[in-house]
Length: 385
Ligand code: PLP
Image (cartoon, rainbow, N blue to C red; front, side, top):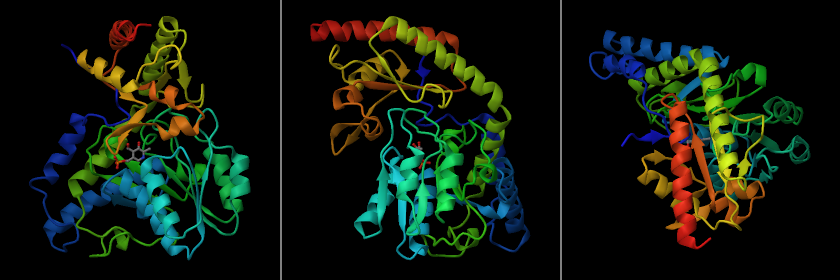
């Protein structure tokens, strides 16, 4: 059975070109990038080249890019690091952020930092006017994601930056789903901190970066040897940093062409699903959204299906998707993003997400629709509807 992977929002396969770029730094170039001898200098040069590549692509200076262990650490460093340096000033974020942002914000709120979680509209983005009302002199940081990982909606970052800066606060954005997928320029967008992660753009897992605008006061999460100019101590992971930069470079190089291709596949699937299942709801902004994500809710009142069951049945057909639920403490909880957007629990639970990537083709769309029709017909029969 040919398997079809439609979960590129969860992770992407490693690009063989990225693997080749990393290989020498797992073997012959093994020096500690902080050592002063030739072995160390060679590793350091590769690390700095990687930093420079990332900086060049996102419109930053090399000294503003700090390697982390991934998107989660970059988000934590931005939020907890700024809060720690901000002397009690608060944070404003949204209810639809990734857990890597929500959890550190909730943790800070529990320990006394003022945190506001702004509601989102039916498309999953905040109303800039609600941000204007929420920020003020006591706000240190606003953290709003560049695009949502579940429904793909892109945030109006330029206006968010304007409001944030007018209030004297800093803007952090989680760009884990957008780096390498849509154009990104920290200066043009007015961003002070930006998180990215390599494994979402055909790079290795366990590496990411945080852009921190020069002059920003931020405390490190870790204390140690002073690497990454003290902001992220720990012996530098040179092979993974090289892989992160190469992944971003390659993804950016083919961005325009690949985005158009994925948009066509996504639109084809959307049209085919709409034709086959007229009762479905599509989640996310109809235009301001990432090209490769399609998030679909089945009408729970007409077809009481659990997205999780649908995902399990599609998996048996060799098709990998994600549902709109997450396993928390052993039970399936509806997605916080869909609930924040105003979907009811039943609808949120009857949701699946398709996310396209480099390996997908028109034939995949045809196979998916065929399997979906078969699986849903069987589930309907089973439920007596
Ligand atoms: N932020 C967003 C929007 C994500 O989609 C993810 C991964 O799912 C993360 C952060 C976490 O990134 P990482 O897996 O590199 O820790």
